[in-house]
Length: 341
View (cartoon, rainbow, N blue to C red):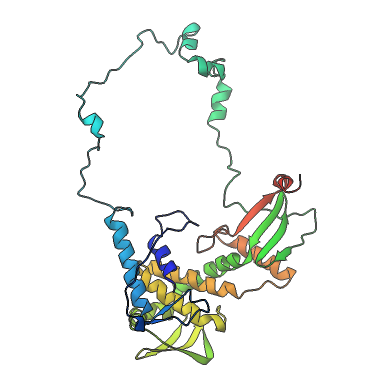
């Protein structure tokens, strides 16, 4: 994994999304421990013990963020009194003054009511008319919230429902505009909700490989694999570890064969870098698996497009993918005038 991903992981939750920290990293390492022949322009290198280095880099960054109070923390020994500015500490305490208008009468009508409002408020219409019972009844009425983010957009019925697909994006006509859907993220959400419910009851179905996949692991990778072997088996992986040789003989049925090894490597990296409980780890790893599966998913015809939209809107959360990415957006008809005025 690149060091850039490790730094982003260390800053996760501290900076806004789609922003990147500025950093400079200085490594002092034996030249025999690196390989510079993995990129034609020599802009990347490979470390012999890259897992160990990335773990060390991640822990160092997190320690620095916590040391200099750049990450949120809870200090139960901190004094609970208010921290006053230095300018206020030198001033003598003053007793607060409460001013009461002895002539104020809330039930009195006439000019006294008008005087209770400032000139600016009266200019905006407040206090100009006496309150009515109808107004109070309307005030306590609860109206249905129309702008709910989880509301399902309705497809157009007057026009023939024809879809336009370009790459991973799908454009469908709706009653008040057009619906733009990211099909890859939609597949992630559909697969996630389908398999996470099955995972709670029993392990995922394993698809055995005709030719097992072999890979030599680093020592930290082998240790992580042994610690979380039961969780990986529940997620649908069938494997064997001989010394440091990994033999993958089965994988979840949703994965394509050419994406199994890269997905398994990502899971090992997640297990090494995430400080989460077992239950949380299962959700994180499931999100990585469905993301790898969605990369190879293709929507070929109109019937598959219809099925994709129907399955997406059956999901409990159809706006956000398991990796917290937006799935769809509504292009309203009135907004299209900005493109062609």
